Length: 266
Figure (cartoon, one colour):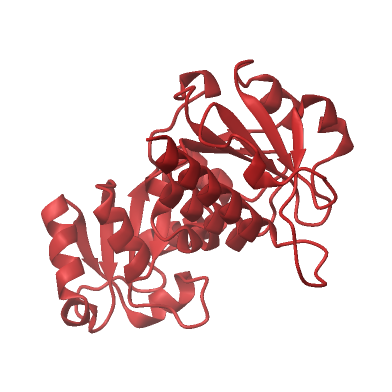
């Protein structure tokens, strides 16, 4: 590809760093979208796509995507296949990816709609879990996701892929200290924490709004240190032999119960 970026190009090295270094993503306020689905999801949400990179054959194979990106104002750059292999974090890289500007987000829960449902995650480490939670939160009409503690970066490429564009569709707040995060919530909000051994069913609680639904770490759940900041423990009853649900699945179940309750209220 004449004029295409090669693996030693400085821009290619920058792209590789953006995929692997959270600090660089933060400093530049940029991150990478790998593959056509995340890019199309970003365009559907009017995200700010800075540059679209197309590999060999991608201009023809993904012509509608390329046309949409160009119409949105994104620059179009060609890149060699060996450069894509050097950059990508996937085993079978797609010949199209993009640099996106991080979306603007709210700084504090005080800036959120107090009548909404806020999803709070604590020390979620698996990128697929956090991405799925973002996707379910957006799809169910939650007002935001607040990620607390030592958690995976929301702009990690695997989180971005798993979110299927939701990273652009719902505000994401990041708070280092879970105690400070829960203290920062409005006193008018009820705080419902998900526990495997709780006695109160999740669907018996008023989840439609004015509340935060809280989900703990994959291995350890919600730390006992946070118990004083939980108004009500809740559980999802299981009929089989499993002890608990995957945290992303549990969050999805609760989010859509909240959506069901909002529909009934309206």
